Length: 310
Image (cartoon, rainbow, N blue to C red; front, side):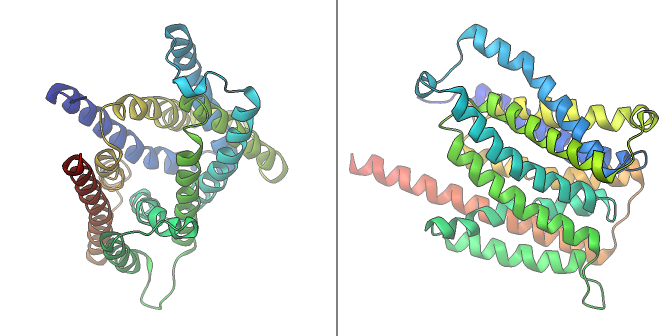
């Protein structure tokens, strides 16, 4: 089935909006830390994200928008999938939210974006052999990471290190999503993982943090943006857009999230990167694009070869 130009343009526009929301969400997450501690922020944020998806789930059920392979899907399968992805999302979001307390929104956005390169490298565990473009992208990304985070004393700051660990957790989360998305409804899976992440975050917050209702009220704007917009709205836009946009194509546009994180950090929080840090960002972004463009080219070559054989 051939995709029309208007449909492709609309999908690209939705993906661009998604990247803008996700990038600016780093500012909301950073601003939220002025009012409350990391785990209670995530608890409320992901609870709001799950609530935002309820109307989407209801609409899809009403319209019968369920893939044929899900007809015999059980609640038990959804629970297992939500638990697995929720645990990984909890790990990644906890490391990110804690790390962002000690670093800037822009740097956190770029370091988190490393999952784009980490995913195919971790695929080696499942004997998925990344191409030369991925390895080239990994080298550029690591070099960029060095300029962005390593100080003159060859020391990485705590916040940057926590966000780097977050990137690995998100890479595992992406791999898990790729495995489970063909087994359960994707929107229900998103809501389920949000619920798991929220419950786990709240449990940690109750034990280790001071929870203040007044702090939640004061931080309502970052919470609403991080929960409703970043988790609920942006995820839904991504799903709608990826019905028309190929995965590799979508990944390139979504990787602009890191660029918008830096722009939002500068415009809203007044964060300024040094020349060395800007060079690191450019190298990391080049590495992300290199890995994704090569993957797209290789996929196109395989399709052309199959068509030729037919």
